[in-house]
Image 1 (tube, helix red, strand yellow):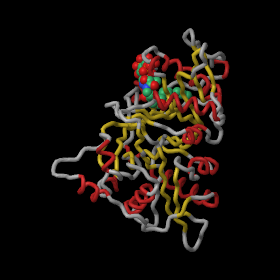
Image 2 (cartoon, helix red, strand yellow):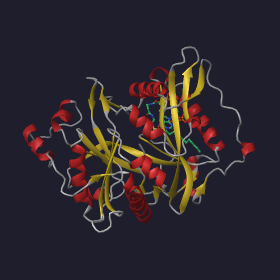
Image 3 (cartoon, helix red, strand yellow):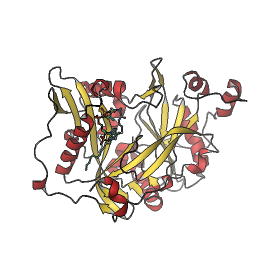
Image 4 (tube, helix red, strand yellow):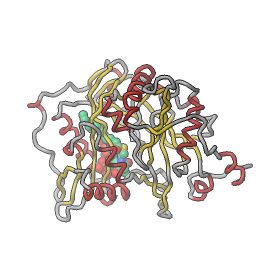
Length: 375
Ligand code: MYA
């Protein structure tokens, strides 16, 4: 049955799980001249190869003005969470030159989807085919092969996001952008000066304070338990689609890494082990294609306010993010983000980001039901 028919099915798998014998044992054939190659991103040379492939060939905006420029440190973070394996960091090389020309990744996670509280999945990301090899149906082979490899680990569902509409999204979210460096954003074509606005007024409009209002501190190992409790309770009580993080995963995904992920916490004055509020954002710059300069962007990750209003917390998030030297702060209209976007002067972006759960029938959800941020 095609994924497109899932709306009529009850919640659950579309195609039943396979037994080991039913899963093809050998890799799918590559077109002549290409071969499979798993990547070890902890190896600096291989990480560099992946970086170069993505920096030159990964996602661009519709007008081809910008292309994502995931840093090497970011790729290491994104691809090595607890339980990852090189077998699912799947590359394709040209057989002769050994040049890396395509890639797709799967890393393990456990999610809630609607009434299914615990489902082992992989998160699929970084599907990329070199520009010179486009439209040769390499992508479907990569997808089939990663599916086979994931199935061999006993997992039959996956979550992923894409700008394009494929069969069948479970939710559709929209990016919003908060200018922090309006002059640069206008100069590089990211923003426009609207009628009746001047650059001077724009700079004033988007200026943020230099010091946060609340006493946020950078997350350290001593906050892992507190963050795990706060985040798990929050996600479980509010959203229909979210990750069930282990403590090890909280440590991996949220402990600060320079120019990759920032996390700040507020602890209870009377019980220092209790984290009451958290702010987090990750760094994903883009190459500005006509100038080869870089647009520095932070993306809202997981933000939770219990001792203050969420808008108040996000005002501090903007101040903390601005201090890291970014040009723009981006957020999807997921989770409770709609409550602060207007007041904090976010502008609506152009494209949608579609959320998918592979091989799982599920009623569609509003963006506010989604508590999952994929990188
Ligand atoms: S989303 C990011 C995707 N990457 C980019 O946008 C980077 C720039 N673009 C490229 O590198 C290429 O254009 C790509 C397609 C690689 C996207 N997701 O080989 P082709 C279908 C799924 O001739 P190319 C992310 O990483 C298209 O509908 N399918 O095309 C999440 C057509 O199929 P069909 C896509 O342009 C990825 C077929 O490919 C996407 O050379 C989740 C054409 O193939 C897309 N984003 O290469 C993947 N774009 O004919 C699914 C196009 O049927 C995972 N296509 O319409 C599924 C779960 C797997 C694990 C399951 C485990 C249980």
